[in-house]
Structure formats: structure tokens, C-alpha cells
Amino acid sequence: MDTDARPLGRQPGATPAGTQASPGRDVPGRYKAYLSRGRGKLGEMFGGHVEVDSYGATVRTADGREFLNCGGYGVFLAGARHPRVVAAVERQLHRHPLATRLLLEPKAADAAEALVRVAPAGLERVHFTNSGAEAVETALKLARAHDHRRIVSTAGGFHGKTLGALTATGKPLYRDPFLPLLPDTVHVPYGDAAALREALGPDGSDAVVLVEPVQSEAGVVVPPDGYLRAVAAACADAGAFFVLDEVMTGLGRLGHWWGADREAVTPDVLLVGKALSGGVVPVAAAVATARAFAPFDRDPFLHTSTFSAAPLAMAAAEAAVAVVEEEGLVGRAAGLGATLLGALRNLVARHCGHLVRDVRGLGLLIGVEFQDAGLAGEFLLELLERDVIANHSLNAHTVVRLTPPAVLDDAETDRLTEALEGAARALGERFPAARPQPDPGGN
Picture 1: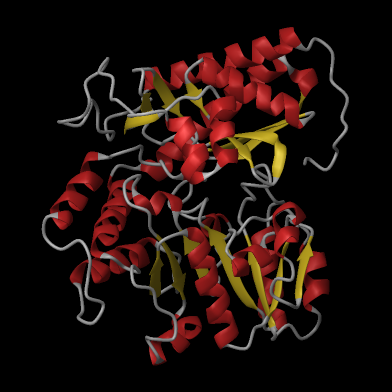
Picture 2: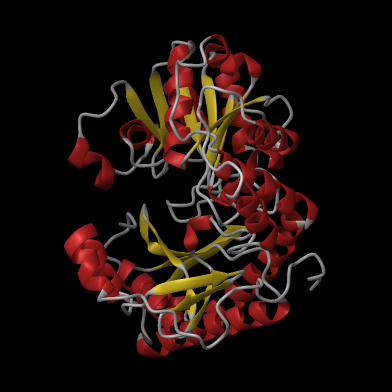
């Protein structure tokens, strides 16, 4: 496997191997006291590990233990603390980290130009945000500025937990405690373009449609080929506003620059986040056509945020795009993802096929769907025992997700494969017969 484009070794100044960075006083206890009692308990359930250092695909805990990071909810496509991103952020930190918001600032223009350069053709304007959910809110407000007030999204979809984004999120578990949300909202089955057309009706000029190229939090649900083209056509025919949420999938995660590129579609607004941070500074964006962005062009104060396009985040975003582009991470995600998906299918079939419903994915977004949520939790714990971090799926508790960095080297890839095989073998030996399926809905 070619690793020439990958930065090797630890960054100068990083904590040496074996060094124990002190987390200070009782971290789980202070989580419960000052942050979230539930979050503190969850941390204890997953071993009480305290992460204090990271670089590339490695996360080190306070006791010096090293984990292979295949989680992070899709943030670390280029690994943690990529030297090029860190250098760009350090330069900006010591020069001009935050802007006045009154004067123009060059880093915002640099980052926007870089993002437009790699975006699908026709997307020409950028509004930067601090999170993916804020990018969703930006898209919803742009849609409303064009009188598209009816929201059509998909069952199982995840778009964030702010109130507007939560309205589009298709999971009652998170929606119901905060009802009523935005009115005139419907969720249609994902992957079913006919259902979308029916929901829009012959005149969908009042509607905004939000979909993901792959539903990540729903358990890595890959739609039928041609689905995005059919969604784009349905929106065009009905006059609806089309928002493609690529916060998780964009910038190479699927082995393509964008999920949009797989089917050559251009939405009115494309959302990007996660990997745009370069694994260093949180940042996201809404990238729009000139027509869709027109209300914000006319009035730049219609939608603003104090920290939007902060120079520090812009330095990270510009460098992150350059790293993906110049180090060939899109192609690497495609090749490495195909290798890992094939290996995972084989080892699951050998060791615990009776416990697994499906293994699926695109690029470096891979999901293992178990017969029940308890098995998924057991698999996560087995991976942690083998020093690998993965994630559960918020909208599908039976699915364990792997989102490895595209900068994994051969040794790390072998280590990951060995850990996956060990976890699968342990699960198969512990549960030699298939467990009952009390929750066919995947909750």
C-alpha cells in the first residue's frame, strides 16, 4: 500500500511514547459534577479512559496507552494534528486569531476560494460556520429566504440537534422531547425517490429537501445507485430547494471528493464539516450556488455569527483542503476503504456471521450491523480492549461505525484488521448461537 504521501513519525514537540500526561484530578467525577452526569457514566462504561494526546491515527490516554482512532465521528480523515494544518494554525494564532468582523480579512477569502475550487461545479459562494448543525441552519434560512418553508427530509436522517436541524433529523428519540419543532415537516423513506416525489407533489416550490449521500448516523445506509440523481431531478421538476448534507461524507470520506460527485449532481446548497477541520480546529460551511446565495449577497447581515470565518478556523480549513488535495487522500480513502470492507466481511463471516445482519460502506465510512444493540456494544468494548476506537450510530444502535483516517499506514492497517478479527472471534465464541431480535427497528 502506497504511503509516500503520508506524513510519517510524530510531530516535533509531541509527547514521546511512554510519557504519561497527567489529566489532573478525577476526570469522570468532574464530568458528572460540572458537565454531564450521563456523559461521565458513559465514559466509565467504556473503561474510564482519559485521552490526553493525539497524532495521526493514534490517541494516547493518561496512563500511556495508545489507541488506533477509527472513530471521532468522521473528523479525522487526515488524522489528528496533521503537521501542515498545525503549522498553518500556529502561524495564524501568533498573527491574528480572531477578526473584528467589520474589516475584511484575507484568510476567509483564502479558505472560501480553496473550498469552491474543489466543490462540485456551480457552487460558488461560501458561508462558514462553527459546526455542521449551524451549516444546516444556514441552509434552512437560505431556503426560507427563497420562500421554501416546507421541510422534506428522510427517516433515519441526521442533520444535527439545534432546533432547525433537529426538525429535519428523522429520529423521534431526539425530536420528541423538544416538540413542537418547525412546522410543515415530513420525513420520507430514505432511498425512495418515488416517495420523495409524492411528498413534493406537482408544485414543490414551497419545499426544501435535505438528504445525505449516505446516511451515516442511521447506520451507514447506502442508497440505491441513481438515488441522488433522482432526488435532484424531483427537486428540479417540482421547483424545490435541494440541500445535500455532506458534513460527514464530504472531502473524500466516501472515496470521492463528494457524494454529489458519485452521481454528478449539484445541489442548491452543499454542507461540509468534520474533515474540513483538518482534525485541528472546528469549522463547517454551507457552499451554495450564486442563485441560492443571493439573499445573503444582498444583505450580508441577514445571517451572521461572531465566530463565523474566524481566521484561526480559516487557516485550518484552507490547509485541510490542501492536504486532501495534494496528498491524494480521496484516492487513498477509496483504496483503503475497499481493502478494509473486504477484510471485515470475510472475518465476520468466519467468526460471527450469525450475529451480524450486514457489513456495508463506501470508502472509509464502514458499518457493521448486529442482530441487536447489545451485541454492537459488546463489539465496541472488544475493540477498545484491543486498543481500537470506533463509534456507535446515534440513529441505529445496532450499528458500529468505523471511520478510519486515510493516513493509516500498512502497519496500522494490519493492526486494525487484527483487532477486528480478534473482536469478531471473541463475540462469536461468547455467543455461539444467534441472539433474539427484539428490536427490528434498530433502536
